[in-house]
Length: 579
Ligand SMILES: Cc1ncc(C[n+]2csc(CCOP(=O)(O)OP(=O)(O)O)c2C)c(N)n1
Ligand SMILES: [Mg+2]
Image (cartoon, rainbow, N blue to C red; front, top):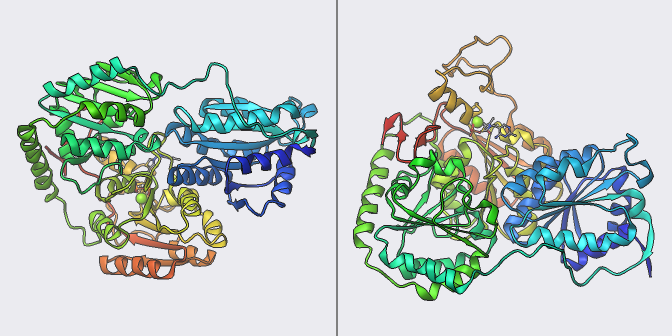
């Protein structure tokens, strides 16, 4: 039976069990949207910007574990996807991004809305395809889904010229896929597992370090068995949050620049460090020569190219984390770690002691706000924007399950959190989805309020409004003599240069976020006490409507502790005092 390329694309979506796609139409993808018009089984979410559509597919993928799909037109549609693709690439999120391209005969002619999508997206994708023959479309689609989801997952772009979308051909969507040279290794040899297991009985201070790969590999369940069986403490990267219950006393939380005091002290003291699905990113390691200086380091990852890149690894283990841990588990027993656990308790106590130094600003503190979110939405899916809001969320929010913590870890993309929340909500309609946002970041994709309202996605946005690009301001305060160059979001033309004294004399904040929410048809609240904030959260919970809660916080609140650039994780500052 002859069918058009566009019809085959829709068939591919069905065969890959895609129930939701995110996108934005344009001249070069009209045939695809036309074919989707006849596919009531596939929900098409119309975002208001292609970047947001990719973040939507990304949030959907992180929350559900499925491949996220996005469709954008040629030229500006495709170029708008780049930040979304780079965000997904960095955090290893499976996405298939279908872009329209000008007709084959026009490629290379500077045709209207032509862009070299393959060239532009190559560095920010796992792979990409330009479909120059209608007969190749089926295989390339199948390969795109396969590559996106397997091995180290990532975004794949498939660029389809408009005339390929319209060309008729008699083909079926392929059943099987084989890509020459692509065989992600999944299971290490039994000998390697033996070597790995041998390190545990002699270690006096073992420590697990969990990263985002644990969630991607769905390795949480088997890991928790090992964790309870061995009693070995855990630290995480930003992306590793949610694999182990935050409330467990042996889960010390995040390491690194804004990690917890206990986690940074533990990683400095440990003698066996087992990194699982981590990248040893510079924000996590601090100065590499001071990172885990006493430890034998094991690194388990599906991607051999990420092993040994940033720090020296003693035992590399390439493989699928779930399979590796399943193979390892039978070799592990319970050793006497009481001296190590006692030492860890002193680290935790130090952390508690320092936290008492936080000063009251007279406005809701980040910790109080996030505790309220913990209490009112204990099981919510949380997404974050980027900046101080993201770090406070990582420090104070509590999780007991994976796929509930969605944050742009590698790229640190402002504007990620809100559209990702829409995607997560579309994929998990029965769950509550809360965005922890900054007043700067939220404005990077604020137009998605329209998507939210019109698609009935009752996302709750919590803006921690400090009137600043707070994280950059914090760096200016600590490392650039308080020269607040272009980080004040209340600054108006005519404000005194060098103002470091935000207060009542400042011009009013623009925009009025609650007013904007209401203008879009969502609910909006502006709060400046904890009581008002909690009441707004409860109102949002009650209504199940999209809601924006703009909560004022102390303008110069800082994230503590901080490991200054160039310093080691053992050299933390808390409220300016050395830990
Ligand atoms: C797209 C993008 N541009 C710039 C940055 C650099 N940046 C990192 S944090 C930050 C400030 C974010 O401000 P806001 O959203 O208000 O969050 P806050 O730190 O105040 O909580 C900036 C500008 C970024 N991460 N992403
Ligand atoms: Mg801010």
